[in-house]
Length: 187
Image: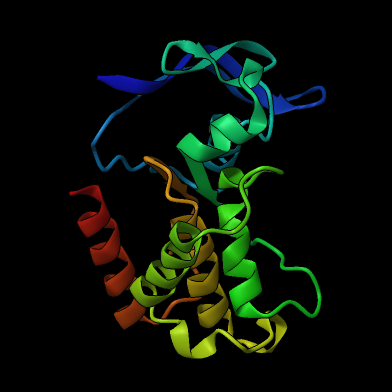
């Protein structure tokens, strides 16, 4: 089954076309890798798959419906993204940033719950950042920050998780750990 589908999409920014005529099926339950040289449009494609940019032509479907016509929180409960080079707000602690991954599950009528707490704790444990929870994000090394951002994505608990160069800034041992974690999550 394919939950995420791109049909004849032209992707880009304003008048600049980055990816002309993209057709892509992301099979459900699979570990899919998009490989290509720098500046070929991989990040643009991932941004379009998470509704950050709309296709100039064609369509992107999630569960058979236009991704860009679905409510934002609904999409955010289904598709998560670890973008390339995310930036944290100044002065935010690790625990507070990871907790923001639960935003799609919040509403005026559903306050912070034990499930939210558990999701955040599991995400921090999975990425090995529990001991960093009280530290400010801007005090961390690049590798530690990358692990924090992965925890944000994991706390979101989406069935589809898109990672844009997730091993950037990580030491080799953490790169292997992260890829093993992705394999485990896929199972």
